[in-house]
Length: 267
Image (cartoon, rainbow, N blue to C red; front, side, top):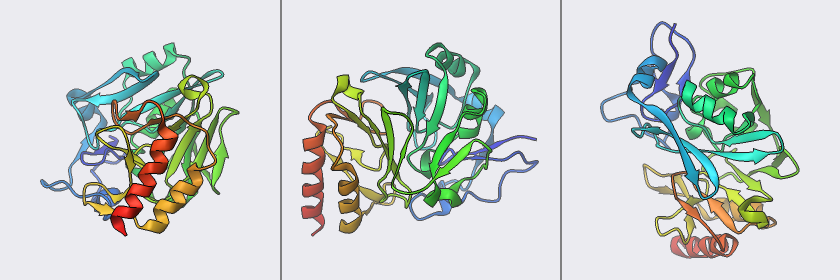
């Protein structure tokens, strides 16, 4: 029986003879049901229409689908001592993309910022022997394809290695997570934020939303909580959720200025 993928958000659903009746992630007020209605594709149909591509994005290998699919995010491969950690995920794992990741040392773990980017997490984990997939426990209800590899971590931080730390920032989702890469950006530190803190188009600031497609901002308390989670960290670079949406240098000061600007705008 086929696996099913939501065309609008890219979430994958278990094997079934029929597509799901609905996608709970799209029915949530932070997302939306496609204007043509709820459409699900089999994994085989998705592979016929799209491929996974990879390229460098400011010193990290990124992966995404072409043509763009669902939310259009890209995953990033963060180097660990023996292999890579995949940060965020894409809706499909192809043999070619898997082979390329193997050439870089393979995957040792996967960590995902929030449910909009869960994608084909189970397929990527299985391709590398069932590596752990770290999702925050506060977002457990949004997992559309349960899998033995999922580790629902709790609390405000979870250390993957001496170099990589996951932090619950909240805001966009209760368990919304950012990743601190201590030795990133040539040793000055990097923060991988997905769209928990969204890098703006001018790549000089970040901003914050409860729902991006429905234009619902975060409240001041949620933004202050994100700022408090990030404040102790040393970083000079921010990697956002899409190709080239990064702040290459001076990111800590840019983040602090962004918080102040945002709070002033909504006050």
